[in-house]
Image (cartoon, rainbow, N blue to C red; front, side):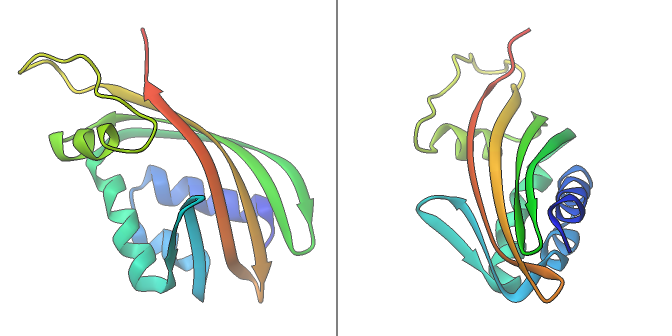
Length: 141
């Protein structure tokens, strides 16, 4: 696996909201660092974390590979999605560095935009370690 193949799989897993596609990208003891302070290890934790994408609709993922080596790579990624549940909205709103969007009861849920960088390390044809750094905000019209 190389960074281009990984990003193609990452895009497919996110847009299809499929935890099995996500888990298949990683080694049995693979690590996904979704923030600098949180890590999911192994298939069970990876799949459980990826469940949150099922609370997103109309997901669009774009990426650009910035660097590629035989054992890893770096990519810039951009995601937009429609928040599909109050549960996801509350997860986002309570995340470090974000604040509740001004919403009145009954207002539609926002469309979110995420922009980030991903660093992946490969071993044995799968990802051993993936780290992401990202920022999210509601999409403005």
